[in-house]
Length: 485
Image (cartoon, rainbow, N blue to C red; front, side):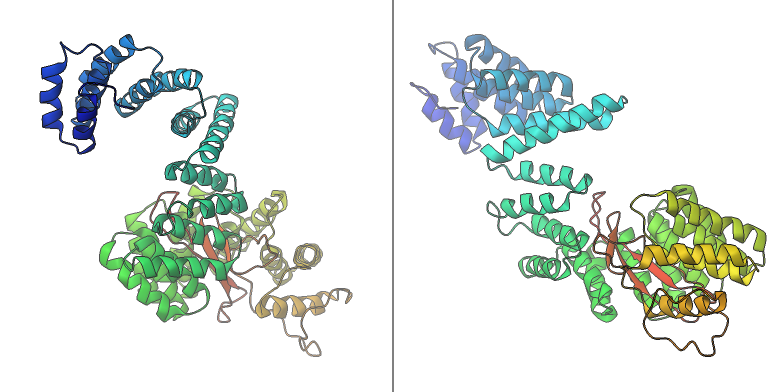
């Protein structure tokens, strides 16, 4: 707000310097002899808000509105005060009125309207209303980005794109945001995580390396960078990064989940189980940690513990085909073939109903189990489903090996060729393929993908009877923002 004549210029200087004591003294001296005290009431309202006196702030700002009902800046400050007070509906109405009064596009008005609509859509119980408000919020954030340079607008718009899984647009918005704040570690870290989601690992690595160079103690950046090293099988390098994170954030559930997976790769099962149990203790509803812990229990041949852990994971995600597949493996090991068949059948049924789910591993496991229990026709059916879902995927060697042996035993025509495997003397399959939580990839890769905010990689565990494993590797500390890498 531009300062007027008389002492308004001096008041503006004091306020800009946050010298509120002199501001108050000057206002008290001039308030009743000033010809137009609008600016005095305006500044007094801002000072009251800074000091936490929101009621007094509203009282003074409303007096300024009474003196000049066309001043957009005063409406904006009233809206901000109502926002701080938690009166969101009233704040939205005030900002809409400010939008109507503003003679030109105002990015600050657009940002606050977008924020309020986004908040309202999240809290709404009516689905259609929530969708309309969310779409309108997105539109206002787009307007805010187009006409202003408010960092928060870029971040909120990118957050919306991320939730809509439009990762390319989210990256574009945040890359533009770097023109405003080129060394903002939060933005750089988010870009790195988004690049991981679209399997641009090298670009993610470069961005996260920038974060570490700017701020070597940025826990989010270190966690995501460690996850990349972990996905590249540099377990010691990943552990060194996690060790740095543990100094500043020892109670980070995702950190201990990843540490547990590092120990799992080193086949140190006791340390892996201890780390994952700590992750679950810190976040009892952490699905990824529960899933990974059950997988390690299977590796350690602790099938009863794996069963109970999988039951907890399934309670969190009842539509997870990978959990039911592992449950089938546990029940098979516990010699409960009937319930194992039910679990495998449900796993196959769930993945078949999901339009975007492509996990041939589930079909292969079910086919192997059916062959083992004498259900030859169903084994052939599941094997054919495995072939149809894996034709353009890069499968690990263990998958190919087991599938090729099963094909020979089922005497299926050789119309689908894997990498060369000795088929002259096929022996019965000895490994069902277990998963470290992999449900396919946008780039048709079974390994190195993000599942719901979490980095996923695949590795073969040859010691597993009838299993091949994939482990969920999650990183991050912001909810939902968790930061998953």
